[in-house]
Length: 259
Image (cartoon, rainbow, N blue to C red; front, side, top):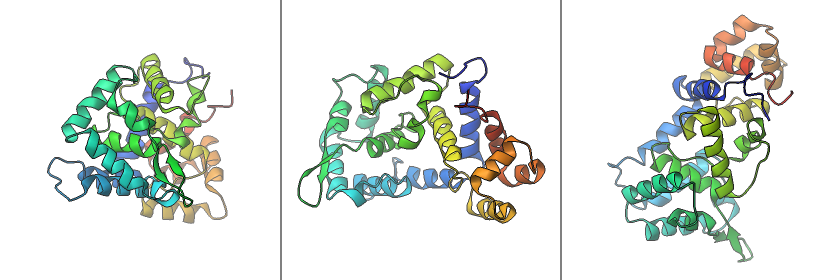
């Protein structure tokens, strides 16, 4: 488990939130696009399908690509279970407060399988897509089930699990232990750390900054660039391109997972 005295998870979560939401990143752009379809003024027909397709595409959850009829099944389940967005939001808030117990209709939403495969066999759960739908429906107050971020829960918790209920509880426990102010910030921390560890900054920056960074990089990979920042080589040039907040996050997380 991470040395709590050495790493301030709360401060790093706030910093990650700033990197992703305040610097004009592609992440922030995608978030803004999807958010428009969750406003009360949104009156598009089949709004559940439209929202799910947008999230599935921009967040690469790949439900539409990997199973037949999955999006439609989820949309119908949402309409049958909740009369409106207000009801969904209220149930989500209550489920969080209960510690994600079994008695909520949201538990049933997550526990169900959706779609079929090409042979007609029943599909599987849609934890990631559903959690992101609820994230937007609750004004970013619901935890995201994300494979990239979850790979790094070990930084703050000894174990990781695949079950949606247990994973949400782990995030809730981490929030309380380290004093993180929101699921949104904590998700931003794990996701950003995961992207950097995977050598990917395409969603962390906008198009112009990414092109400038790669031109500056020459033959170097993203991993090489991250290492240069952590060892303070070419510090001035790289800091000017990627921004002070991302530069600081990369430096402050340099030794995480290596101790």
